Length: 478
Image (cartoon, rainbow, N blue to C red):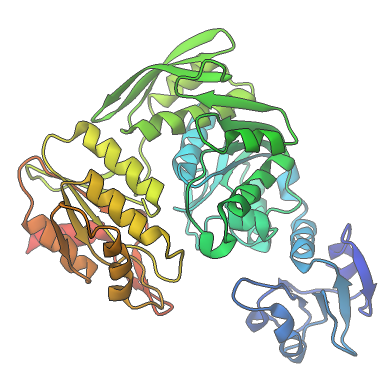
């Protein structure tokens, strides 16, 4: 593809590059640059691609797109190279997002489950659906592993192209706050954008809760319709900032467009009556916990905004299945239960433990840690919430990354120092899980929190294989 074709629609400030040059591939990682490639220098969270322009040119780059051009380089200067990368990617793959119905979900918790529920209902209605999210990416039933919730814009458009070519009509994706701030979804128009909730997370990146909220609100400036959780404290601000008409949902507020009443919480799922535009339908979702009602309402709101009849959506919801790492039951063949959940924020821990408390016959045992190199202020909060809601706590490691695991645990324990809830501290996570299983009592529910779908533990930039399902299975083999 010629450079000038890749740059179509890109706001170029100046250029010393040959627009007729044939470009091999587009790269934003200088290590991957080959002869004839276009290198886009983006300013990252950890480093700045502008530092590597010279290296990219030495490796044969035909041109560079950047915000500051080195003297004598074949450079295309733009105001924002992240936005330029997204626009170049769309050009490179033939604007695949434009040929599908794009659906986005943002919020601290509930995004993954909501996307899977929407995918399930749309597929029941006869559509082929692509999914992009934290657990994995899916093209219909084909699984594509993922590194982050929302990929970088170039990988994102490459994935859209694969979905388009496979015959997908709809794409449902998790839209992280990082992706909105870092322009990974720049240029994408969403038919429906949805907001789940806003609770403390990612303050290492956003610094304040208001910055975090404003990042998520960007989705509703690039969506045709919005779906907003009226029960969340941020709802009024999200609605005020939205540039599109919004459907609201609530567990009980009659002013909401979509309202759940007659809630029933069971050990194996939830039931409620959904009221929308004068219609009422009984909904059953086989995923337990009050938060499942909120996720169901969000997903229902999205398909209703697309025009799906309420009765059809409710019928489809009854056959949905749970998501890996979200209140996932691990087979043990014992008189106690082991659950795996991705809860890794104060609100996430509170939600899952309250849900489990609602159907537990015996003790609730919370096993958890906190991630390293992330917001430290949530560590004591998570410790306090766990000790308040559980009958026993096992404090251990999560992904320590470059921090000392014991130091992270000390931060957690700071929030538990006044608690009378018994606890055990075991730094090594597999050993902690084995300890919890060894000391389990009849009717206990042991909740392994934080890892969820992840099958690794990250230590000093290295991801070591660690699957909690295997750890539990190994305990019973031995």
